Length: 417
Ligand code: PLP
Image (cartoon, rainbow, N blue to C red; front, side, top):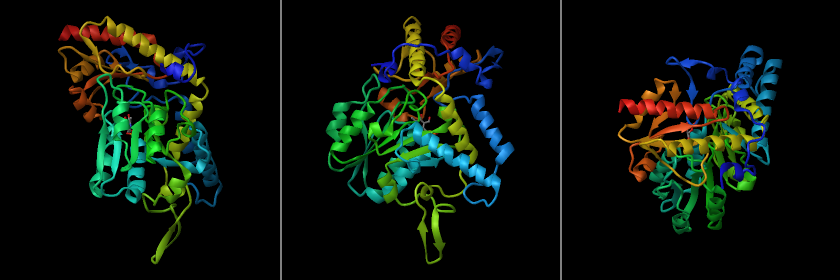
């Protein structure tokens, strides 16, 4: 099943990526003397005018602190900031907006859960499962927790194709497994993990599940209720929003039971030297002045994305990947890395006789921006016995012309080898 089928659509209808490009001013420029081809979307996406304008409007028109003002600007900032939370809640189908916690990004969402839920619920001898595909930000916080508590962090193996070994996963599940933390989509290979099945299995033994949605939310709709996960995290900047803002969604009863993560203003109900009582959700987890412009920008990004038929977006991106794979099949010396059945947004590869970073540099000289290296997934690279890959990652505004430019540039790269 491909991405398009997964979201119930298999053909591109009216979606027009060339028109979409016009909403993204940064794309209209030359880099190193060539029109820019931006294929580093898994690292960060570009921002449409709608997002740039929303942030600018805030700073130009109603910049003020939230929740604490006795004046009109602050009231407006608070209203728009809280409306942004509502937008995110609807976007992931959260039962309540109070279950949306602002974070700095996916990394902070994982750290929040590892620190708060983890410290309260993980004991010596317990097990935490992650897959070998994970980004470091979905490994290291759990590793730190496991070290502190005398628990074990256990990697679920992946196949050569880059798919989680579900049999091995099932065999690892026992009563000591307290949490499973899984990426929805791998940033290094693009594998769409069968998170719904993984969650269902984990629930059978009473384990909690965190889903790292950093690479998923821009590519297909996410419904936390249908997934039945306990926590879901993502970053605004990979979803056409600004850097520095992200989201943790959590199951209400778990969030209510969890101790605060950071202490400070806004997260308290009362504070005295005799003791402090904590605010209700979501503020209990939002100490200090939040990234107000970031939240407003993220909501604008979500509203922008929702202007499109999400099935058409997925179908368009899938078409680009299919086209890329066709071109790759006839590109001498190119070896795909990651051939999972279900892939979103990512084309990872190696060029025979060339180090990935040299390929990246030579592509950049031709105006083609990709990422090279281990992609913050060193355990995966170790498992695949490679130092890293070249990664072209696609988004809503990429076209088949971009794929053609990539392959034309690769032919030139080969001449330098
Ligand atoms: N998880 C995945 C799968 C990612 O791709 C990334 C970033 O590349 C992260 C987590 C961390 O995201 P951030 O740096 O925005 O916190």
